[in-house]
Amino acid sequence: MIDALEQAEAAVAGCFGTAAWAATERDLVAALEATHRLEQRLAAVKLTLVRELDGRGTATAQGASSTAVWLRDRLRLGVGVARRLVELAATLDTAPPGVRDALAGGAVDVEQVRVIAATVETVHATAGAEAADKAVGVLVDWATQFDAALLRRLGTRILDHVAPDVADAAAEAALRAQESRAARERHVTISEQTDGRLRLTGILDPEAAAALRAAIDPLTTPTGPDDTRTPGQRRHDAVADLCRLALRTGELPENGGDLAQLVVTTSYDGLTRQLGTGALDTGLHLTPEAVRRLACDAAILPAVLGGNGQPLDVGRQRRLISGPLRRALVLRDRGCAFPGCDRPPRWCDGHHIKHWADGGPTCLANAVLLCGHHHRHLHHGDWVVQLGGDGHPEFIPPAWLDPEQVPRRNQYHRRR
Image (cartoon, rainbow, N blue to C red; front, side):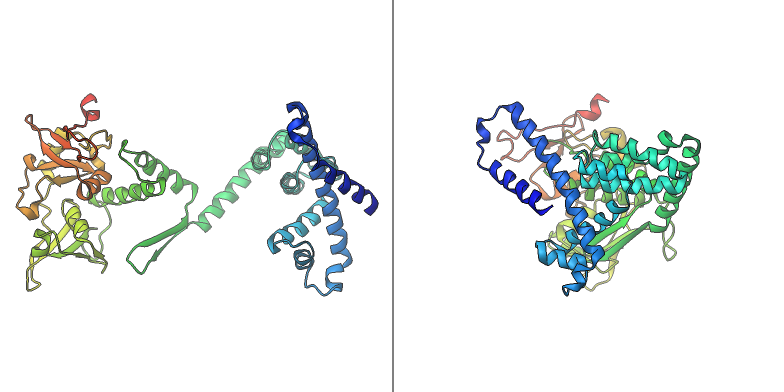
């Protein structure tokens, strides 16, 4: 064996001296395919050697704690790679002859072997040895056409081809097992960071995942050419929009006797001078800009304190843009009024054109409907909003975007 491998190694080493640029495209493609077949055949030989060495206990005899650790040192592999190599060698050793022959013949790669072996094992447990033998042939044939990922998906319906009489019952059982596993493993973890941010991690079951996708996907598309948010930032903002919408419905369960709400505490002087920070009822702090933005939202209860810390105004929801005034605003703007935005009214806040902390009245002539993204954009950017002569909102872009600063309007809702 060693003589043959040394000859093969010398032949492969000789290929490095060949001028690939001088070969025709047809020869290059043929050489690539031949190299891939050779790679798979060498993998079969390698796994056979690993399995034999593991079975003989060579690693422990030479002082290593396991074959994987020995391979890590001997072949300079990562321990994870070495461990998978030992596991795959054991899998190939017990796999049907057809699987080993396919790898040795270069027809499949090691990842496909892993998928085929696992699928055949499932078929054997479900439908018996005869069906498992049939599955080997079907899967090897598919492996010549599809990669490991697609082969795994196709393998979920292998019983339709090799044991149709039990396929439906097995598929239903597998689905029930998957559903049960999803129910057990569902969770969401909320970890508070030191700076007040939250880290969300978790796994949603298929039903909740579908609901979340349906809810946030329409909100994650860019709102226009000026939307420079990353996909991750758009998903973040979509989740925030969902929370604001839920708070606005008034249908959340009571919390301590009160309807679910968000309370922002700030000083009156700080708010009017645009300098004061704010504190949420959870203890987290907000910048002055965030406080002023949240104060526009009827679903947020501002708790404004005087100089002695006494509440001057707590929960001014009736004074904010809600009820009949919000309905009139929806009828006028029909959705987010920012140019190019298609967000519907239910995703929008009522924004005071002249902030109420600056003396701006709460009336239709001083209000505009904005989605969460453009509400933040207006508070933090250089755009200016005003009502045109016909009473509809128009937005003046910053000079760096349009030196002429020609007012722009949202034509999307007009067309609809």
